[in-house]
Amino acid sequence: MALDPRRLRGNWNFPTAIWFGAGKINLLARACRAAGTARPLVVTDPGLATLPMIAQSLDSLTKNGLRPALFSAIRANPVGANVADGVAALKAHRADGVVTFGGGSAMDAGKAIALAAAQVEGGPTLFDFQEGRDTPPGTVTPLPTVAVPTTAGTGSEVGRAAVIREEATGRKIIVFHPGLMAKVVISDPALTVGLSPHLTAATGMDALAHCLEAYCSPFHNPLCDGIALEGMRLVRDHLPDAVRDGTDLVARSQMLAAAHMGATAFQKGLGAIHAMSHPIGARFDTHHGLTNAVVMPYVLAFNRAAIDEKMARLARYIDLPGRGTSAVIDWALALREAFDEPHTLAALGVTQDSLSYLATEAAIDPCSGGNPMPLDVPALTELFADAWAGRIR
Image: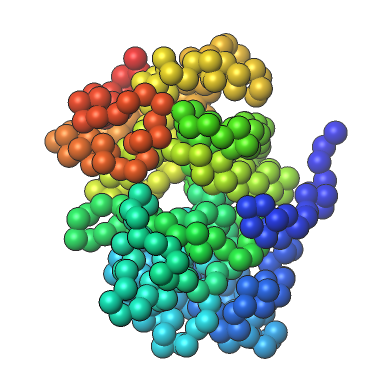
């Protein structure tokens, strides 16, 4: 039976308050009040800032008695200077909260601004909250955020982390604080309708990567495993439809749900896909979801010995032809071909002379510790070489 998009609505409270369904953007002012902000800084990217949805949202907030301001000076892979500029804009407006509006870049920048704006002189700075460090989260309380995703991939709207490139080192840093979780998420699939087929595919592959790596992680969390499995079923059933017909609100709704599920599931952990993607994105400014899509089959092949039983269960659950890891690799390759995505890192613009550097950086990325097979520089050097040349072992 075909789903009616009008039935795909609801208010969820996991992992935070999510107001889900077409038209929910009309509740943005109510969400801001629920989060405790009357003077929000709306953080988005330069492309979205020019679109009617932003002007309409700012107008709606103003008509409902709030005092919003707009900040959009962020890069596709946000850097520390973007956060500093956002903090300056926030303080100039005397904002008491942040609305993150857009894809992963805007979400991460907005959350980082909310954290950095709460810093006190002599206290920990933004990058002191790097994931894995022991800085006490209670030393800073981030400003409240409301998240409005316009892509279905990163899931940053339901996450407690922000990925920001630190200019001094050139590394992508995972900034973590429990207070970065949005107070309210406005999850309106109608806002994703304008996304191009290329970006729909790339962000959808990001959602898949999150679910897949969480499921493959060796850490014990059956709750996340169940969420990851169902998220991958939603991707299998609905991402091709969302790419083929961007106005399909059922497909758009289900992919937004899959993105939320991926970011919820990866509380369990991530692995080599993200450990590789982070330095590639920092060095070559590539799209994160697309980079994940390129390296995905090579990482699956590398991890085969540790994940084959899990991949057999996944293949059965989502009804793939074939069995085990090979069936999942074939599915990933078929998706990439259908979406006309690159097969190699070389085609993505990664240079061969950078592979040694990238392997060294990936080895120290926090995500490397969640990979089901041990990762070190020699193993990653071989893995990067395979992904660059297109060898699936």
